Each structure stands twice: as structure tokens, then as C-alpha cells.
Image (cartoon, rainbow, N blue to C red):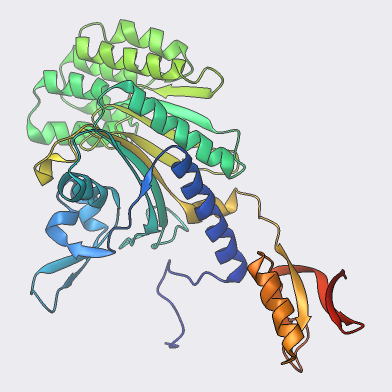
Length: 380
């Protein structure tokens, strides 16, 4: 095998794409900062026990593992940044009030999570700790929508669901572990025939099959109240979804009352954002109030994340930056002119002897020329 061949689903990021990704990263971080979110940069690897403290088996399978040559303990390369941010909130910041944090960095996956996906996503996320009310959910969702808008994606479809709906039904059913696992698997795949084939009480089966059909617009919430009348906590979840939807009256909304994604992780409202041109949700988030418990400090928490690299296929390329082409030379006046232009924020690229314009990452709309002994910038 050639020494320069990379592993499957791992790729170099070349200049034009790297520039695009970096510009998107800056837009995301600037948008989060405008909402008051503080940037944190957790390490790429840490002890495996900490990385998996708040996550299930699926994250364990996605985590690369290695042995620390200093301590002899098992380390993990993070597959998700949220557990690390929860640790930071619980043990390093240890604030009593509301904490707003954001991050952007690579994560590594042992396998791609979907066809043609990278195993090295660049994960951006934002999270609020310390507020249990729907105000935090609404703020996080507003930030997610505004972040996409900053990237030029203004027509996102907002899909809402709530972990409390299925939790109310399944906790009340008191099914044995094997049957519950089979049911959760069928529900997660939206497999109505699989649910119907299970040995469930007739009323439970009927309710779940009806819920699997409750996907659509705002009318779904009204239909759900009839279906869920037996479970007060499920009705409260519908109230939460209604209140959250009312915060975004202009949004293109849909609801999924049987969504089981992240059943063991999320504790409240969940959301996904879809945009034209993408077959999968670009952004996923929601409330996960249990996340700090493993670190000894259970705090209300809500947030979202997405892979910046996954945006490349749907975000319009940003035009190359304009630049000034300058000759190479050691003349003091030339050097001073170049330094002055760069100090003012201009990009100045010197043409090395024997090499014409070879790169395509800048639009050279001006040039630095000697006019009567003075170095001046003129249009090309």
C-alpha cells in the first residue's frame, strides 16, 4: 500500500475547502459570541471513563481507544464534545448561575455514521447550563437558526419532538427488559409491523401504532392530546412543544410524537433542522438534564451541535478574498509599502522570481507598482 494513502473516510482538506470551512467556523463562533456564549477548547483525548460517563453504548462503539504510556490507563479520542463540556461546567467552572458555552473542534469516529460521511467531523456546538425553563430551549433553538442564517441557510425546516412522550408511556408499561429493548428498536426504526408483532398489551400496541402516524404540522399536537390523554406527563410534553413552537411563528415546523432518537440521553424537547439539498438533519439538539449527574453535579442543560464539514455540500462557496500582487525585492521602499498594506488588513502576495501566478485562493484585483519612485497600488 502506498505511504500516502489515507484510511477510509479520512481525507485531507485542501486550500479552497479549508478556507471555506475556516470562514464558516468563524461565522459560527461569532454568532454564538453575539448571544454571550463563551468558547471552550477541551482536549482531543482524555481518560475513557470520563468520555463515556454520560453516554450510551453507541458512543462507546464510536470511540477510538488507546493506552496512556504514562499512567497505563485507557484513553479515548473524543467522538462527541458534549460530555467534555459537561465536565468543564461541573468541575472547572463550577458556577451557580447560568453558563453559556460553545466549542468547535474535531471529533473522531471509528465508523462513519452514514454513507459517505467523514470519520473526522468538525463539531460545532453551543450549550446552556443552569436553567430548567423553556426559555433556555428557545434561546438555543434561536441560536441554531441564526447560526444557519449567518451561513446563508435561511429556509431551515424545524422538526420538534419530546423525550417525555415515549418515556411516560414506556415507564408506565413496565415491560420486561428484553421486550422493552425489542420495542425500542422497532420504534427507533419507525417499524410499525415490528411493533404490531410484539407481545404487547392491546391498548399499548394501539397507542404506539397511532403515535407512529403522528408526524406532520401543528395539527399533530391536537391529535396527540386525544391519543395521550392517559399520561399527564406526556400531555405536559405536548404543552412544552406548543410553547416552544409559539416562539417561532414564522418557522416551517413539523412534529414527530414517536421520535425515539436519543431516548436514553435526552430528557425534554428535541429538535432537528433540515435544509434543502441535504438528506439528513444538519443540526440536532435538545434538553439533556441528566448529563452532569455522572460528574457529581446534575444541572439543567440544553444545547445543539453539527458537523461543519457536512455543510460544505449545501452552503454556497464564499468568494475568494481580494488581494494585491507585489513583486519580490529587497528595496526598502517596497518592503515598507508591503508591510504598511498588510498592517492595514490587506493581503499582499509577492511573486517569487521565475514563478508566475500559480494559486487560485485569492482574486488579484490590484498590484503594487513603482511609479516615479513611489510604490503605489493600482487596479489590474
